[in-house]
Image 1 (cartoon, helix red, strand yellow):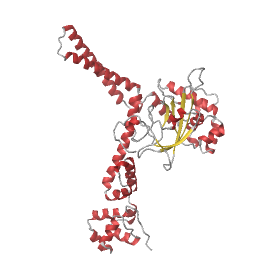
Image 2 (tube, one colour):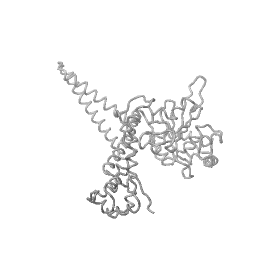
Image 3 (cartoon, helix red, strand yellow):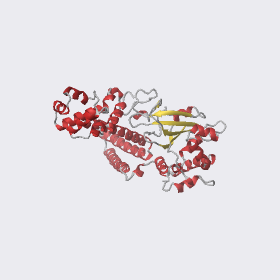
Image 4 (cartoon, helix red, strand yellow):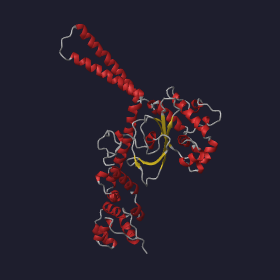
Length: 433
């Protein structure tokens, strides 16, 4: 008994293979013993075909039946559906994605490649925007270039005004233009050298340098786990830190050491496994503050079978002071999306928050986020109590309700978001999300 086989692309593959062989529908239908109209329905994926008919068609087309059934377009069709999901206002027929991939594979690959390129460019834009905002060396160099250009333009406008100037003033203005031009040339060379510097390290800020060093260490620092360890041990555990990054490392080491004393690794690691690394259960089991549990989970050793968590820590102004990203997640160090639990917790100190969060676009993931905010240190009488918010992240299934958050408004495609405070850098980048 023939088993009906009906993947959505089978008919499309038959049609493409027939055209490649230079056969008409009438010719192929006559050879396999069916009508041309029935073959037309098959090729448009409107009729199922059985094993015997499939074998006969495959034999005449010089193809393997399995290739006609399975093909290689499943991933391509999935990429097309993801691209359509990123721009729902275009009204792409999602149910026809496999048909498009089968009938026009070249065009389908082009569309999928362009969608992937757009996603990569959006990520690059996010990184460059963040760097322009926070890289002190780049900001200082740009400021010098703009200052020099402004000075030259101002002096040149005086000389070009036609106003009569005595010799001394004219010579002074010429000298100013010459000196400012030299300054502009020097700053431009410095800026170009900085942007084109060898290796990624030349482009790192102290913040980035520390994050990269901690990532190489797997976020776990055995030198700070020992009972008598001192924060300065981090400089040995993370060799090669610059003078600018060392104070940031020491500040993190002091926090790490305090958390390790509150929740020693020998007891916390097996407990975390037993509770499936659930922050709420661990807070209840240990009695430790939520923010301590969240930070401690992020420093469990990967070699112990613990998952890799994302971690974000921000101050009361919303600027990130720690950031360990995950695939599909990129957060700027300031000006981030206020919908993230990290920032929501700042308005509710002492109250832990748990939420599922979905990032936009085909590359955006869905994450389970746990966040808590607490004073960074005890406040004096009448003094402020600066808050710090901690958010722990792990990937979550895409199914189910989730907060539709983003990165920053300037690069977020969610144009209908109620929390949007400024337009995107590229208007209409992905309207309707």
